[in-house]
Image 1 (cartoon, helix red, strand yellow):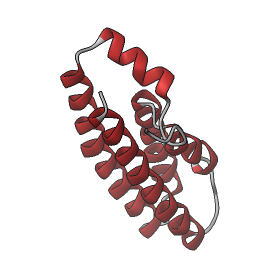
Image 2 (tube, helix red, strand yellow; image 1 turned 180 degrees about the vertical axis):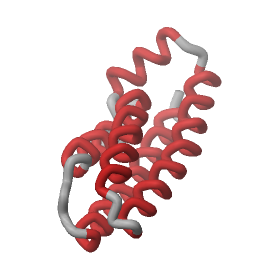
Image 3 (cartoon, one colour; image 1 turned 180 degrees about the horizontal axis):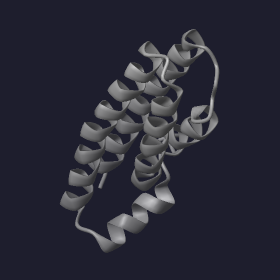
Length: 115
């Protein structure tokens, strides 16, 4: 049984009613690729102390996470998107975000395997 902490089962089950399972798998694969790019860009924003890039990349990833039904990733991004904390704090947020993202992807993959 999939933990519902990380994924929005209502949303994902809604997708399953409307879409073929293969399409949902493609959607997750695309999210995995995109989230890796977003995390790299967010890291670059931390390294360069670029507040505008931090907000833009967090905002983009927030939308992608919401669309994929990754609730905890989405919530974390809501909390940190407008953060004006120093680079050290942002690096900590990024590390937590990366872990949450991996846990959510794993939960989604587990859900897929049970379908």
